[in-house]
View 1 (cartoon, rainbow, N blue to C red):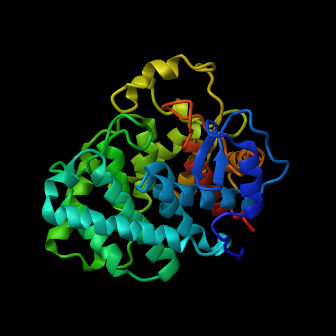
View 2: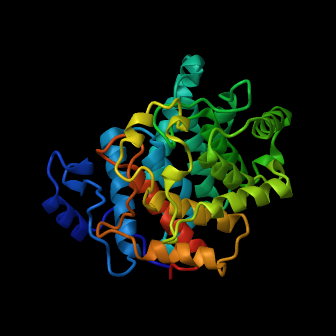
Length: 366
């Protein structure tokens, strides 16, 4: 097991700070600066797990201190996946867990005073991310259900919508694009928490059944949501029939590109992301008809396919792994162009976590 890094490698800070400017940075807090992500960033000659980990720890810490909120694309994804990498990367950041606990306390206070405020906008999905992050910590680090995770799950269930989903926004794909996406996070939170479902009371069990009913009766808006459904069903197997599971696996494999990677832009028509408000931006992009493979989708595809039972020895999986191992950038990131704006490209953060998780599931992280 690798030794845990202390928030952010000093050498990486120095290099990043020397390259960055106030108008060219992805994450920043004080002297900690991570420069902008770009398709022009050079690639590493060899996979570097240490550089990827440094990028993740630094970006997550900077986001907490500078933005002070739970963001699906950064700290939300960090605690969703980083605990599962404990065996190869060391223990995840205690600072991150404590930040989640502090945000939980603030949301709990709001719920007790004005519960309707937590049902608006993205807040239900943010709380689902808190619940999943704490549940994943319990599953992979502490190995037991904590009082904080139990509280987060109970608060999350109290915010379930009448149709069984969780409220989200619909304007910042792929994460903040639909209630369906929020429901997948809630489902994985429930499945990850040690012993929570086995000890759920009657009301909680009813909420879980309502969530499952929602998935069975709601058609995903696009093929990206099909991937999230397949991922969720690896945690809650009774969501899909065997035939449907096989169909989704083959659909995902069918999207693999000639170079071995996957491109997120091939998983939805521009009008199918959220309410379609990014359609013009996406259609105007150079290469719209033949989008390049990216880290986010390639990592997600391999990770989900492995969880769904595809063997690491499958030639298609091996080709995807080869793409990941040869497309890491010198910052430690894997490049993915944002679906929303050409500024921060925060999706490179989730793409980096997805890539590491995919490589771990294929026994490529030593």
